[in-house]
Length: 249
Image (cartoon, rainbow, N blue to C red; front, side, top):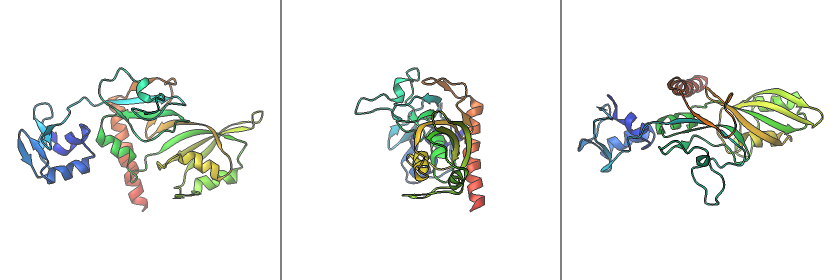
């Protein structure tokens, strides 16, 4: 038996908090009985659960790790007919959605799921789940410039949170540097804009880690299903990041 709001969130109805609002508003029925209080437990396999009179989709939870190539849209459809993540993941029957963004010109780790509760945990601004990238930039940025990124740098939409930044490799022949950068926010094109702010534009950008998940061992354009242990570790990672942030405030 599981709490009703958790079952609703796992079915992709909405975040758990929003599902609680639905229950309190009298929009949820279990076996044709309207539920208006929190804490009710249900059997998702046996009970008939409806929202606004419509049965919820009791689909199997899917958690997919995908190594997105450059030039692929982080979306389940594209009106312009460009390549989308769904073109690479055809063996999953359930309707899954990308968690967060990964730019068209960027590559690397992308998580897809139909678990609305987990997706909300990982993307909610208050949880600050870390994301690590390898950014290949033009030239060799001096250490004091990387310190600016470590301390937080001003962008048009405000100061960034402090980032973890380290050199990975320097290629003097190509005049390029690979820098590892870990951020705890999810602003649009944030890593690219951070390097533009110190006058070292990004040539290539690859996400190699998201929360506790790592990309290592997964070929470009390939995907795999997360283990149960990895899913639970992701949940712990999101909640731990949230608690650390609350403690520091």
